[in-house]
Image (cartoon, rainbow, N blue to C red):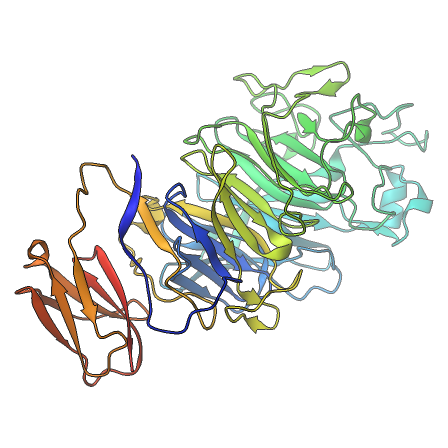
Length: 543
């Protein structure tokens, strides 16, 4: 399939700005046709836009994200939400998991936040309908010392190790925990020889060195920021920002087996079966590759690099970011090769870096994912900058989030750093199952004083489907009374549809000749959409 122009240049008869500072900056024929979902950190809404930045769907919620959001295959939005928990103050803290259907109905509202634990950052929807929840739990100073933690490295008097629960949703606000894994069950140390987990060295790649300290001894000890599941391997991958590592664990265990060294269908137990990025955490060989990374995940099975792992490598100390892909040394049984006191690979499979700073450089949050056509969409979250690169690493699409901490930006306004942050953004193809039967009629751009005559919308169309674009004119635009639709013979007999700016169908008619008059008297002033055969779109301003 080649990419072709979707028939017309979108425009409004309103004032233009000289340059795009928010919204869609550019869109080319090589971009992947679809819709981008993002949930700004400062907003209680999640937005779905087309490749020209027109709003297709908005979910309104009562809380800011905490901090991830996903579109599921039934068209529902699965998101995290912030709760008020004064005991946990780390970045990315949430406490709530919510699911909204396409029509904004809240169908699940599950709180996972108490005075001893709290959900944060990320969740993962499983094929069986359950949800993996990433959380931290409080371990007191006494509990830490009992596991061999050096008391001088407890500046906040406690640690918050990571754990995972798998929850089966029940009703609108309940759930059953059917599986769990705790990092605290898998510790080693060489500080206190009186403890059972003491070893003269800590060269145990399957265990966590309880005295590893890369954040000044703060309670938020590991700061895991992403979780992903591989259904083919039945494994879970985690991204630890403060350890600059990714970790993989087995999911085929029972909860009891997940607390042990061995167990489950694979016999792997709950120890780490793979880790990569910073061998110093277990006295391994090699140098650190990852620095404060985010969004570690397996590339989906339908994509060109299926089964490999993609990472947004923030590079906080090196001062530049990259998007990296690695090919872990794993066999069909999910076993990872460990040689010379190290896990491979020693080289990246693919990497993207850019000299644009500070736009692409993001010292925290952010993410990237590969699209079905091999392009990669990147979210530099600290500047709210989403962009897509093709196989030649050319930028083929760009968007800047217009939702600021202070409100919605006006076109021409340049957002300051950290004023329009976004944790991640996801592109879903036009054929994504979640769009089946849904109204995808675009409305208006999100930003104020929008400029709509700078973007061409493209879609996947075979060469035989379009040979010549039938010409038509719509005038006057803006319109005060009646609108004239003038068409070539090819469009005679087609239906036309008149929508308001919310995508609601107001009325329809048939094109009987080369010139049709559309009555607009009695309609409120504002923006409307005229669709010819639900293929050709024209945006109309009524004054």
